[in-house]
Amino acid sequence: MMTMNERWIIPEWPAPSNVRSIQTTRHGGCSSGAYASMNVAMHVNDDSQAVAQNRQYLRQILPNEPLWLNQVHGVDVLDATHAKPNMQADAAYTRHKQVVCVSMTADCLPVLFCDQSGTVVAAAHAGWRGLCAGVLEKTVSAMQVQTNSVMAWFGPAIGPAAFEVGGEVRQAFIQQQEAAEAAFKSKGDKWLADIYHLAQLRLNRMGVYQIYGGDYCTYHDSERFFSFRRDPVCGRMASMIWLE
Image (cartoon, rainbow, N blue to C red; front, side, top):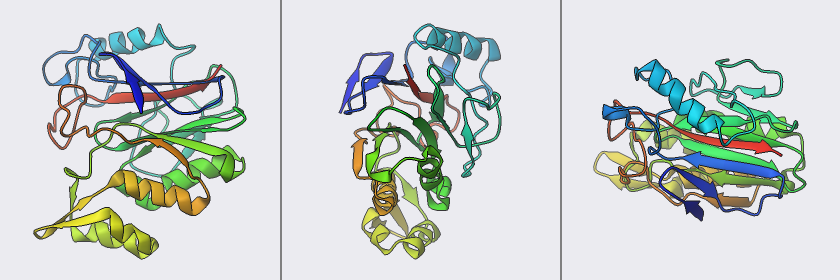
């Protein structure tokens, strides 16, 4: 479940009280046209001054500037405490207070992590390529805590009724995990993939069972979310987490 106003979502999950998290929507910023209005990404050809202003709006409700990453659908995980902005990676973690980890998405799955003791948090960007290559597993491993103490929150991603993929994508997941077959439904010569289910299977295999969120479809909810599949020219939302 999520608590939501027009501008952002507060994840509803049983994270420790010192763990804070927030998810933006497409509302509350100053970008215009296809990027209207809360686009936080510099790499999508939006006006850079508008993006900077949008990030400044966010900064007012955060303890620090988030560690904005150069996401490449890979599996690299950075220690956000020591990383520099725009470094190439698709996940970040921290054990230090007021360091904000962030994932930018517009159909890909953003996953926020913490442990039950509130000693570490992380944010990962999981498109199908990164998910299949193990970005979530690498993120959990980087947290260096018992996997049964890890909690995960799935932010807004493309839903199972909209995420159409080819047979090679289905085969790539099934080759790694037979149970992944249940996450695909036939649609002509294509397949509909449930990225939430695929991510859950990967985490369950690691021993992570405390999983929350996964309630929305970015593709079908054009009022609230950007979607690259729906609108190839669009902004990005931000999923952020930090320790108080």
